[in-house]
Length: 495
Image (cartoon, rainbow, N blue to C red; front, side):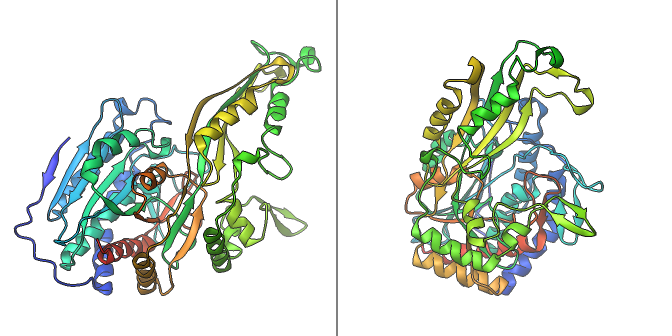
């Protein structure tokens, strides 16, 4: 690890408020001249999260992106900045930076968060695109990880630099950039414990790892679903046998899998059956969901790349679970949902002979409402799936992981006024509030540790940006405005 401190003796004393036009001009220049080229280099590195690259340490890709990001931060010469790559034995590294307050009376800290690890390649990329091949097209930077969320550290420093350039008073600022987020942030809590004293009394969290309902206004995330995951495996034989000889007598492991999953999910509707996996939507979140549904309307479901085909001269598209905007929003933010994200025990189609397979294994991803305890849900899920197996097959649910979701705290008046004013200044529309179906484990950890902190959970993952999937992109114009917005919100922090 290394530390780098920039002396404050030559820094000008902050004297004035942040100018909206100037801050956008400055951060846009930083994006064009420096950040976009850095992100292009970042995209080229397959820094997959440890869950997807067990040999991450020997491959060195995570260390490469951490080292490159640290070097860029150092080159910005931010006054008063101390930077360190922190390494705990056997864990992925984190970047931690500190910037001294310019407000003499400021006692609280602003914490800025992001991550540098990536999801795996996935299939289905356009022929002219690829996960590790950056390409800019119509203001969008394509490639794995740029939007989710390799840009975060760069945007955070650009926002701080804008404060410094305009001599704008600001509180103490710290940054925590991890490299285990896409694996559930299992390395993060030890780092939070190790850095807790240095983090200080956090009064505002700026989490740059979330989504946007559109690219026309600032969006804040007001809730995140939790997650329970693991591998469900059904074994009926010790080896494959001729299907003509055995089928009808030996039950199919796939059919047993269907029976087991029927305990968990109504396959006709997708509703999760255990009542404990559901919770009531708080009144404040429901009111915000109604407002957001009115803003986004059909875009809530039209934004996805639906399968389609020609039918009698017209194009027929696959359908969502609902076309009601409010129900669509709640379904993806406050309702538990099961997805099968991987499978084992199946040969490739070209190698699939007439053989009854000995086992079927599915990787399950269960998204949980924000207020459901994920650790408890995993225990209930394991018992539900494993007990009383059909045909006394061997049914196991292993490799379980969990992360409890998050519900935003009550909004302080200064914060509500600041985000609306900043969004109106840069986008011409007030701030929108939207729940996200994804999981950011850090947010629940921080809410427990700093219950009075305001949470600016935001990001660039807007319509069709497709994080985790093919053709992921970062919307550069939106990222510039978001960076400027972050700087201005920090300038409003009462500290």
